[in-house]
Image 1 (cartoon, rainbow, N blue to C red):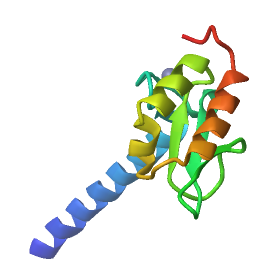
Image 2: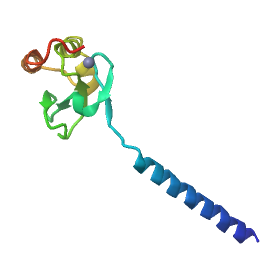
Image 3: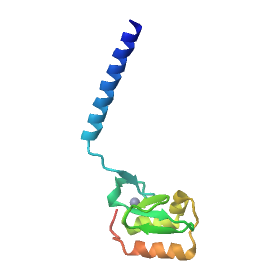
Image 4: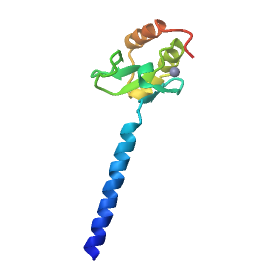
Length: 117
Ligand SMILES: [Zn+2]
């Protein structure tokens, strides 16, 4: 009697798990990320990923697949200025930019759309 109840409960749990799995796989999941400057949540592919590389400097990750701690910025000059000049990017990536590295990233930001936001 007691074991019968346990089996019944187990089956119910299994059905629930199957239903959950079917539900999640039918919903198209778009990865969302937050811009560290303006805090806007956007689809990951619409943001530019920045990655902290081994020596502690920050590099633009054009592929979005590089290993390391990453942060995201809108492809807009304004966000790059906020992210780089207020130290938000460094804070998020727990590193300190050298002047040369900062200039390099600001240079990248200048090549982006100034309209952006
Ligand atoms: Zn932004």
